[in-house]
Structures are given as structure tokens and as C-alpha cells.
Image 1: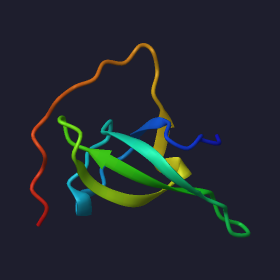
Image 2 (image 1 turned 120 degrees about the horizontal axis):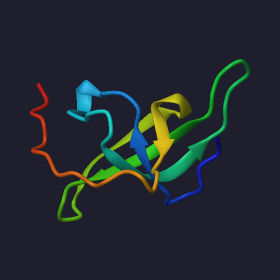
Image 3 (image 1 turned 180 degrees about the vertical axis):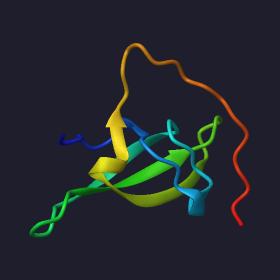
Amino acid sequence: MKYDLFSEVALTEDIAQHGLKRGDVATVVESIEARPNGEPAYALEVFNAVGETVVVLLAKESQIEPLRSDELWHIRPMAAVV
């Protein structure tokens, strides 16, 4: 699925090196074309609950999914990154 710039997406898996969990929400800030036999990737910006940037990272298309109308936002403490 192609994601538009500035659309919000949810992570489909934990990304431990950034302290992120499956279901965390991020904003698409860049689209990276797939290499031959690869999948597209996206630069994502993750914000905390008050709108401050926590991290900008690259994620494969399979690591994100669109938000759905049957989902609720949820607040959790940020995981400590070791």
C-alpha cells in the first residue's frame, strides 16, 4: 500500500532500538522507492503525547499499517532505550 506524505500510520511490530511498540503511531515524512526485489520504505516521525519529536526512523512498508476507524488512541509511558 502506498502511503501519502504526512499520513499517520501504526507500527505492526516493536522497534526495540527506538523503544517503540506495535501500535505506536507515526507520521510519514518521506517515501523511499523500493530497490529491485525489495519493498518500499518510509521515513517516519514519532511524536510524544505533547507533540515533541521523539525519533525519526526508516521503516519497511511491511512494518506499518494505516489507522482504522475501529481503533482508539492510547497513551503509554515511553520505553527506556538501552
